[in-house]
Image (cartoon, rainbow, N blue to C red):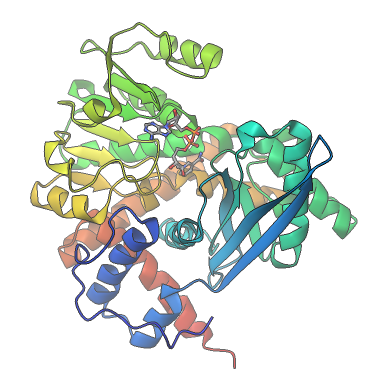
Length: 432
Ligand code: NAD
């Protein structure tokens, strides 16, 4: 893609003339600010501002009734300067290119923050998986894989699960790719089933990483976990494991929610009951361990720690002022808009930003890829110990950067990441 058309804004105020809920604009606002603070060279800025490669495909699928549907799919590789692209594939009816671009760039910054040797990529297919049979879902996945096959690979770009995709879908991608290679290629995807070369600890890695970041943030603020309360938005993979592992630190989890709303109990929720409820019903419907509250009320509870672990844009300039938590650890990608960032800075709320807080998942994906490539597998304790070392170290680096440049932890994380990717790009030079 031609970079000359991209002009760096002269005014770097991230809150100006932006649609704060467009994920690409939200990502760009932070990137621009980090680039300005770093004094990033204009040429490097132009390179890092746009994706290296964007693939759009039309995916024909024969439906169970014999009719033919065509689905729109994307794979965006934001940067492969530090290593193969890395990032999930999202199946959702409203997936759009700007969203995939933002998510791909976030992966670049996330991998750089935790120093795993991957670039950033993301995929998306516009479909409603709840309306597809297993057969239709499999045919859609395999055809999408075939259509992006020239651009993915263990050394090129390694997909993983994201919204509405799962280990079974990764198994179909692995199989399709391996059939074309004529040999099993487990390192083509991460987040696959254990028996196909998945890693111990991968399923819980993001939530466990969120709890490690919560522990570090509380220590940094001089807050004793045993006297703290916490609300968790979302009880899917990230939210449920975050809640359980934060509770294990001694923090009282007083609220948790799903898309239909939350449960609040000032005495603290029993995490075993929450787990059983979720295992049996996969939602909080009918769970009577406390009072029903809305998702908006959950965010504004009088708690010490808030974990947004559901979806993007839930904390904006409209509600940030009402949030009482002193520590926010972003389990979800993009839960906070740039407008809210400014309010948190003014109110001295410590935010552990998404590109650090939820990087446990991609870090263990990296471990999975390493294990596939060396053909030697680690146990869960080994995985978790390595994850803890990496995440705690990255947290300290981000805090040191924030102190040195007198910026928020979010902008510090972006600065750390942008600087690393810029450095590699500069050193590699431009192949002409
Ligand atoms: P999930 O589908 O397992 O769970 C999502 C949860 O959020 C569910 O409880 C759902 O009911 C709830 N939810 C959805 N929309 C909501 C809304 N509008 N308001 C309130 N609650 C809502 O997803 P997940 O894997 O737990 O991912 C959650 C977030 O974390 C996403 O932003 C995802 O991109 C991010 N993330 C996930 C991983 C991972 O390893 N799974 C890694 C990094 C980041």
